[in-house]
Image (cartoon, rainbow, N blue to C red; front, side, top):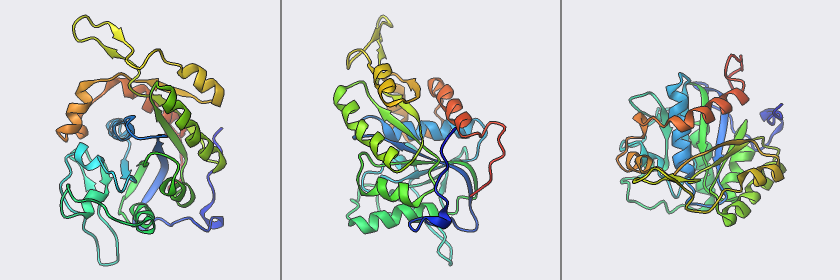
Length: 275
Protein backbone atom coordinates (compact mmCIF):
# COMPACT_ATOMS: atom_id res chain seq x y z
CA UNK A 1 0.00 0.00 0.00
CA UNK A 2 1.16 3.54 -0.77
CA UNK A 3 1.47 5.95 2.12
CA UNK A 4 -1.08 8.74 2.37
CA UNK A 5 -0.13 12.16 1.10
CA UNK A 6 -0.23 15.07 3.52
CA UNK A 7 -3.67 16.60 3.93
CA UNK A 8 -3.42 20.20 2.59
CA UNK A 9 -5.55 21.36 5.53
CA UNK A 10 -2.72 20.41 7.89
CA UNK A 11 0.19 21.45 5.65
CA UNK A 12 1.13 25.13 6.00
CA UNK A 13 3.22 24.99 2.78
CA UNK A 14 0.48 23.51 0.57
CA UNK A 15 -0.85 25.48 -2.39
CA UNK A 16 -4.48 25.17 -3.39
CA UNK A 17 -5.59 24.18 -6.86
CA UNK A 18 -7.82 26.68 -8.68
CA UNK A 19 -11.55 26.04 -8.83
CA UNK A 20 -11.49 25.28 -12.58
CA UNK A 21 -9.04 22.38 -12.20
CA UNK A 22 -9.26 18.93 -10.65
CA UNK A 23 -6.41 16.42 -10.63
CA UNK A 24 -6.58 12.84 -9.44
CA UNK A 25 -2.89 11.98 -9.14
CA UNK A 26 0.39 13.91 -9.17
CA UNK A 27 3.63 12.10 -10.04
CA UNK A 28 7.10 13.68 -9.88
CA UNK A 29 9.86 12.41 -12.17
CA UNK A 30 13.24 12.89 -10.50
CA UNK A 31 16.94 12.21 -10.93
CA UNK A 32 20.01 12.70 -8.80
CA UNK A 33 21.89 14.56 -11.55
CA UNK A 34 21.37 15.96 -15.01
CA UNK A 35 22.07 14.14 -18.25
CA UNK A 36 20.27 10.89 -17.49
CA UNK A 37 17.25 11.57 -19.72
CA UNK A 38 14.82 12.58 -16.98
CA UNK A 39 12.91 15.09 -19.12
CA UNK A 40 12.73 12.59 -21.96
CA UNK A 41 11.27 10.03 -19.55
CA UNK A 42 8.78 12.63 -18.28
CA UNK A 43 7.67 13.28 -21.84
CA UNK A 44 7.38 9.58 -22.64
CA UNK A 45 5.38 8.85 -19.48
CA UNK A 46 3.01 11.73 -20.19
CA UNK A 47 2.43 11.00 -23.87
CA UNK A 48 1.97 7.27 -23.28
CA UNK A 49 -0.47 7.89 -20.43
CA UNK A 50 -2.46 10.21 -22.72
CA UNK A 51 -2.34 7.62 -25.52
CA UNK A 52 -3.83 5.06 -23.13
CA UNK A 53 -6.92 7.22 -22.73
CA UNK A 54 -6.13 9.09 -19.51
CA UNK A 55 -6.41 12.87 -19.31
CA UNK A 56 -2.82 13.92 -18.70
CA UNK A 57 -0.82 17.04 -17.91
CA UNK A 58 2.92 17.75 -17.84
CA UNK A 59 4.35 20.44 -15.57
CA UNK A 60 7.95 21.42 -16.32
CA UNK A 61 9.39 22.33 -12.91
CA UNK A 62 12.92 22.60 -14.28
CA UNK A 63 12.46 26.36 -14.53
CA UNK A 64 16.02 27.39 -15.42
CA UNK A 65 16.73 24.42 -17.70
CA UNK A 66 13.44 23.73 -19.50
CA UNK A 67 13.44 21.25 -22.37
CA UNK A 68 9.82 20.10 -22.49
CA UNK A 69 8.74 22.93 -24.79
CA UNK A 70 11.38 22.02 -27.38
CA UNK A 71 10.49 18.33 -27.22
CA UNK A 72 6.83 19.03 -27.97
CA UNK A 73 7.35 21.86 -30.45
CA UNK A 74 5.64 24.44 -28.22
CA UNK A 75 6.29 27.98 -29.41
CA UNK A 76 3.25 29.79 -28.03
CA UNK A 77 3.47 32.23 -25.15
CA UNK A 78 1.39 31.72 -22.03
CA UNK A 79 -1.70 33.86 -21.61
CA UNK A 80 -4.28 34.00 -18.88
CA UNK A 81 -7.59 35.20 -17.55
CA UNK A 82 -8.55 38.40 -15.76
CA UNK A 83 -8.66 36.59 -12.41
CA UNK A 84 -5.08 35.27 -12.71
CA UNK A 85 -5.61 31.88 -14.32
CA UNK A 86 -3.04 30.60 -16.83
CA UNK A 87 -3.89 28.53 -19.90
CA UNK A 88 -1.58 25.57 -20.61
CA UNK A 89 -0.43 24.63 -24.08
CA UNK A 90 -2.51 21.79 -25.52
CA UNK A 91 -0.89 19.45 -28.03
CA UNK A 92 -2.78 17.94 -31.01
CA UNK A 93 -3.19 14.76 -28.91
CA UNK A 94 -4.63 16.88 -26.06
CA UNK A 95 -1.72 16.58 -23.64
CA UNK A 96 -1.66 19.74 -21.49
CA UNK A 97 1.75 21.33 -20.83
CA UNK A 98 3.19 24.30 -18.96
CA UNK A 99 6.87 25.26 -19.14
CA UNK A 100 8.85 28.38 -18.30
CA UNK A 101 9.75 28.93 -21.98
CA UNK A 102 6.12 29.98 -22.42
CA UNK A 103 6.84 32.97 -20.16
CA UNK A 104 9.84 34.24 -22.14
CA UNK A 105 10.09 36.41 -25.25
CA UNK A 106 12.09 33.71 -27.03
CA UNK A 107 13.29 30.15 -26.50
CA UNK A 108 16.90 31.31 -26.39
CA UNK A 109 16.32 33.72 -23.49
CA UNK A 110 17.89 32.80 -20.15
CA UNK A 111 15.75 32.48 -17.02
CA UNK A 112 17.59 34.87 -14.69
CA UNK A 113 15.40 34.56 -11.60
CA UNK A 114 16.34 34.27 -7.96
CA UNK A 115 15.25 31.30 -5.89
CA UNK A 116 12.04 32.77 -4.50
CA UNK A 117 10.81 33.63 -8.02
CA UNK A 118 11.59 30.13 -9.26
CA UNK A 119 9.80 28.53 -6.32
CA UNK A 120 6.76 30.77 -6.81
CA UNK A 121 6.68 29.91 -10.52
CA UNK A 122 6.56 26.19 -9.71
CA UNK A 123 3.71 26.72 -7.27
CA UNK A 124 1.84 28.92 -9.77
CA UNK A 125 2.27 26.28 -12.48
CA UNK A 126 0.33 23.91 -10.25
CA UNK A 127 -2.21 26.21 -8.62
CA UNK A 128 -2.97 28.83 -11.30
CA UNK A 129 -2.76 26.84 -14.53
CA UNK A 130 -6.22 25.89 -15.79
CA UNK A 131 -5.60 22.17 -16.07
CA UNK A 132 -9.27 21.19 -16.16
CA UNK A 133 -9.89 17.60 -15.09
CA UNK A 134 -6.79 15.39 -15.22
CA UNK A 135 -6.23 11.78 -14.29
CA UNK A 136 -2.47 12.30 -13.95
CA UNK A 137 -0.23 15.35 -13.72
CA UNK A 138 3.45 14.54 -14.25
CA UNK A 139 6.00 16.97 -12.81
CA UNK A 140 9.38 17.06 -14.55
CA UNK A 141 11.67 17.97 -11.65
CA UNK A 142 15.07 19.66 -11.81
CA UNK A 143 17.91 17.27 -10.94
CA UNK A 144 19.26 16.97 -7.42
CA UNK A 145 17.85 17.67 -3.97
CA UNK A 146 17.83 21.46 -3.90
CA UNK A 147 15.31 24.20 -3.31
CA UNK A 148 12.79 23.38 -6.05
CA UNK A 149 12.38 19.67 -5.16
CA UNK A 150 11.88 20.70 -1.54
CA UNK A 151 9.24 23.24 -2.62
CA UNK A 152 7.45 20.66 -4.78
CA UNK A 153 7.42 18.01 -2.04
CA UNK A 154 6.15 20.49 0.55
CA UNK A 155 3.65 22.40 -1.60
CA UNK A 156 2.17 19.92 -4.07
CA UNK A 157 0.13 16.80 -3.21
CA UNK A 158 2.64 14.34 -4.67
CA UNK A 159 1.28 10.79 -4.84
CA UNK A 160 4.60 9.25 -5.76
CA UNK A 161 7.90 9.74 -7.56
CA UNK A 162 9.57 7.91 -10.42
CA UNK A 163 13.38 7.87 -10.26
CA UNK A 164 15.41 7.95 -13.47
CA UNK A 165 19.01 6.76 -13.44
CA UNK A 166 21.67 5.19 -15.68
CA UNK A 167 24.00 2.21 -15.03
CA UNK A 168 26.96 4.37 -13.96
CA UNK A 169 28.02 3.87 -10.34
CA UNK A 170 28.43 7.62 -9.81
CA UNK A 171 24.86 8.23 -10.88
CA UNK A 172 23.62 5.49 -8.55
CA UNK A 173 25.49 7.09 -5.66
CA UNK A 174 23.95 10.49 -6.40
CA UNK A 175 20.47 9.03 -6.81
CA UNK A 176 20.72 7.61 -3.30
CA UNK A 177 20.50 11.19 -2.06
CA UNK A 178 17.25 11.70 -3.98
CA UNK A 179 15.92 8.49 -2.44
CA UNK A 180 16.89 9.70 1.03
CA UNK A 181 15.15 13.03 0.43
CA UNK A 182 11.94 11.32 -0.67
CA UNK A 183 12.01 9.06 2.38
CA UNK A 184 12.59 11.98 4.73
CA UNK A 185 9.67 13.84 3.12
CA UNK A 186 7.47 10.71 3.31
CA UNK A 187 6.94 10.69 -0.46
CA UNK A 188 6.18 7.22 -1.90
CA UNK A 189 8.67 5.95 -4.49
CA UNK A 190 6.78 4.23 -7.30
CA UNK A 191 9.94 2.74 -8.76
CA UNK A 192 13.11 3.31 -10.76
CA UNK A 193 13.72 3.45 -14.50
CA UNK A 194 17.23 2.70 -15.72
CA UNK A 195 17.75 4.73 -18.89
CA UNK A 196 20.58 4.16 -21.41
CA UNK A 197 20.87 0.64 -20.04
CA UNK A 198 21.94 -0.88 -23.35
CA UNK A 199 21.86 -0.39 -27.11
CA UNK A 200 21.50 -2.57 -30.17
CA UNK A 201 24.36 -2.56 -32.64
CA UNK A 202 23.06 -1.03 -35.89
CA UNK A 203 25.10 -3.53 -37.93
CA UNK A 204 24.49 -6.88 -36.25
CA UNK A 205 21.78 -6.06 -33.67
CA UNK A 206 24.02 -7.37 -30.89
CA UNK A 207 23.17 -5.96 -27.45
CA UNK A 208 25.90 -3.60 -26.24
CA UNK A 209 26.28 -2.21 -22.72
CA UNK A 210 28.07 1.14 -23.18
CA UNK A 211 28.22 1.86 -19.44
CA UNK A 212 29.02 -1.70 -18.42
CA UNK A 213 26.76 -4.40 -17.03
CA UNK A 214 23.83 -3.13 -15.03
CA UNK A 215 23.80 -3.40 -11.25
CA UNK A 216 20.21 -2.24 -11.02
CA UNK A 217 18.92 -5.37 -9.29
CA UNK A 218 21.55 -5.05 -6.56
CA UNK A 219 20.85 -1.34 -6.22
CA UNK A 220 17.07 -1.79 -6.12
CA UNK A 221 17.33 -4.50 -3.48
CA UNK A 222 19.50 -2.28 -1.30
CA UNK A 223 16.87 0.46 -1.24
CA UNK A 224 13.81 -1.79 -1.59
CA UNK A 225 12.87 -0.20 -4.92
CA UNK A 226 10.55 -1.52 -7.60
CA UNK A 227 12.32 -1.84 -10.97
CA UNK A 228 9.95 -0.27 -13.49
CA UNK A 229 12.12 -1.03 -16.50
CA UNK A 230 15.45 -0.79 -18.29
CA UNK A 231 15.40 1.26 -21.48
CA UNK A 232 17.91 1.35 -24.34
CA UNK A 233 19.76 4.19 -26.01
CA UNK A 234 17.58 4.88 -29.04
CA UNK A 235 18.41 7.57 -31.59
CA UNK A 236 14.73 7.76 -32.57
CA UNK A 237 13.97 9.32 -29.18
CA UNK A 238 16.57 12.04 -29.64
CA UNK A 239 15.41 12.75 -33.17
CA UNK A 240 11.79 13.07 -32.07
CA UNK A 241 12.81 15.45 -29.28
CA UNK A 242 15.00 17.58 -31.56
CA UNK A 243 12.20 17.84 -34.12
CA UNK A 244 9.56 18.69 -31.52
CA UNK A 245 7.58 15.56 -32.41
CA UNK A 246 7.26 13.94 -28.98
CA UNK A 247 3.49 14.36 -28.94
CA UNK A 248 3.01 11.80 -31.70
CA UNK A 249 5.97 9.58 -30.80
CA UNK A 250 5.15 6.03 -29.68
CA UNK A 251 7.75 4.02 -27.75
CA UNK A 252 6.56 0.49 -27.06
CA UNK A 253 9.09 -0.20 -24.32
CA UNK A 254 7.61 2.51 -22.08
CA UNK A 255 4.06 1.09 -22.24
CA UNK A 256 4.43 -1.63 -19.55
CA UNK A 257 6.17 0.91 -17.30
CA UNK A 258 3.20 3.24 -17.57
CA UNK A 259 0.82 0.33 -16.91
CA UNK A 260 2.68 -0.43 -13.68
CA UNK A 261 2.58 3.21 -12.56
CA UNK A 262 -1.13 3.61 -13.32
CA UNK A 263 -1.90 0.36 -11.50
CA UNK A 264 0.12 1.47 -8.49
CA UNK A 265 -1.87 4.72 -8.49
CA UNK A 266 -5.13 2.71 -8.59
CA UNK A 267 -6.20 4.41 -11.81
CA UNK A 268 -7.10 1.17 -13.58
CA UNK A 269 -10.66 0.65 -12.41
CA UNK A 270 -10.15 2.89 -9.39
CA UNK A 271 -12.56 5.58 -8.22
CA UNK A 272 -10.18 8.21 -6.93
CA UNK A 273 -11.48 11.62 -5.97
CA UNK A 274 -10.21 14.73 -7.72
CA UNK A 275 -8.11 17.18 -5.72
